[in-house]
Image (cartoon, rainbow, N blue to C red; front, side, top):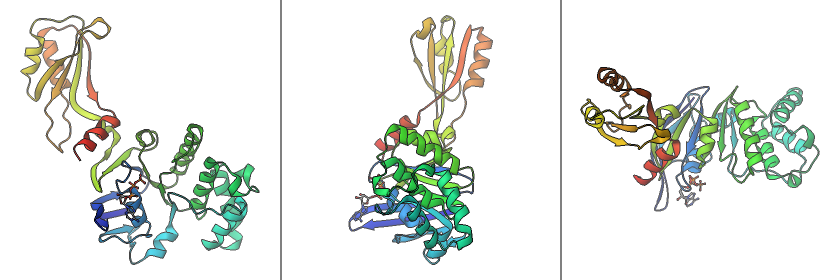
Length: 311
Ligand code: ATP
């Protein structure tokens, strides 16, 4: 649905994007995660045809954004960082104006508007001027304008920025509902947002993609955690002798039982291998009193911090 290839963009001496490429398939909900200044908004503005890259290509539904800008824009829903809302207009009048701008035929406007209003939970606020709405409700109006024309692709720039925790939960719920029918790409600098909403994350740091993977893949490590009932002799030495093990860290006696983290060797870029079967075989051969054996996982925060510090 979206193909981005080798995008670069500089503002004077600032290299905002340095060779960004990714692909988003129909039906995916993908988080573009990065710290402030990483290049997320720049990337999104290029994808939506509001900014020209210095080089590289973007196609949406097979259409080149640079040469078919209007056509692409008519097919997608876009919530910019600050949605262009008119504070003096009522919610209803504003959305009606958007329907006109989107050139939705008169007879289709009512059902389309009703659906967008219902999806965004704006039924009780139709006659209120947008300027009098809370930030969370203004964001809902921003989302409603992005979906009036029923796009199959939604691009949202920091959809929950500046909202209070209750509003964040509501907007996330709304995004999840929209994801049932649309492909969604949203930017954020909030790790929990990615964990709450998507399966896949693209991590952008200093204008470069540092990771592009499903959350489960990012979390996987080649490390394992072993808990025994009691510590037999030479456990650590035996574990170290296994192929693919680069070290063993005793974890003390959590809950009264000796525990060890067995560190796997993981080649950069390679998929994490699973040491558990080999450890299980060893434990059985040696007759160790096994309590627990599991693959260790990393949090997105750990992954993100590792990537950020090596940027
Ligand atoms: P944030 O999370 O803070 O919104 P971001 O990841 O969206 O950041 P961008 O807004 O794309 O990042 O900015 C990337 C870099 O480009 C930053 O260093 C920013 O200062 C710079 N930049 C963005 N827009 C402009 C502009 N119009 N003129 C000059 N520099 C710009």
